[in-house]
Length: 368
Image (cartoon, rainbow, N blue to C red; front, side, top):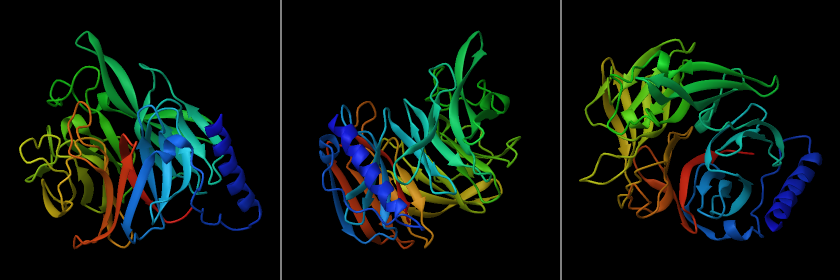
């Protein structure tokens, strides 16, 4: 009851500000009365970030899960509570957020916090939405979803891409891994029938191409703008572009300029020298050369989740999303976010502690 009332107060206050202005919403102020489960998460910031806000995708076992925007001082200024895990978001041309709620599905939310539209989640083995979502050049929404087919007489869970047109209310399948990959050959050491590829990242490249990251193949693929063919396969199983300094378990992949790919290298298979890093590769024909990497002053091995985001000034925001000994995978922790210059200097550091269980991603926000 209290949490629902608190969310309603925030929405009403932001809505009133919007009604008094013909322009964009005024920057949100720090929230002084957080719900108890969100207040149990601590934020400690040092330095000055480029963007005024950072959106954190937080998860707390038995407590708050959702999207929280913090200011430069690490103070929460806006939040949206999810029913399931917070697993990616994008923004439409009008500034609306489209949040991926693991239980609810896709939820379009305006800057005042009001739910505008939603696409309901489907239970497995249906079109179960997961891990990432991206706005298309047409201002519709592309998302990852599980797909099941029979293989060797038993069900196999693969991946598909679907497009949601919120205004038209239509949902259309645009791509299936089963049409382009063969589990007989394209099979990683972590693959199993209930999760063959484990796609975990989706983004548009500079040519309108679409990048998809496959955790279980340790690979990134580029799809042609019409989604009809695979242009290249970077790293991992069956690579067409090999990497001399390999990554594994990668997340938040983005082609930041033609032929330059930024990713968070979790280092999932790096069991002896345990660390994670932000990494930028330049594709040169059939090989990819590392042209930049960044590791924090004290190595942080975030074996799952986490992110690397390039800002317009060339800085990079790097988010390490796991605590010490995250169940089942091991990790060094802590949950933290850095903004670093191309030369590797830290300009901002955010430490997330208290009751936080994990942080899926951290994304700079220039405005609401």
